[in-house]
Length: 150
Image (tube, rainbow, N blue to C red):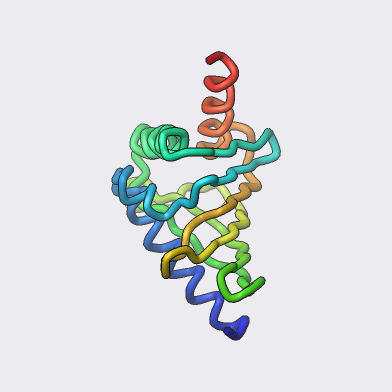
């Protein structure tokens, strides 16, 4: 495949995955995630090694979206390339919408590795360049601290 084909694939993936997540559909969100799935920010790394762990992370993030009354998650792919025929690396930015308006914060930047499995693209790794109080950071931090306590 050509590198220029990677960008529309990544954009479609992030649009559809984001729609499932913002709708609060945990099961649909999980279908977009590979196992294991690695999620990282400047504050640490979470590796979901099974569906139960991935479900807990997704549910926490979705509950945070609902708690903040976010109605849309708008992502825009900045660059995407094929690393091989079944792997796409992409950078993107994310903005949230609340009450019909973009939040005043600048968009945050992310990096995602998509792997094709059984003719479906899935998140293998996501990295977030976010502030420490962002929803992504809080979700990962809370999940990691809960795992350390158990």
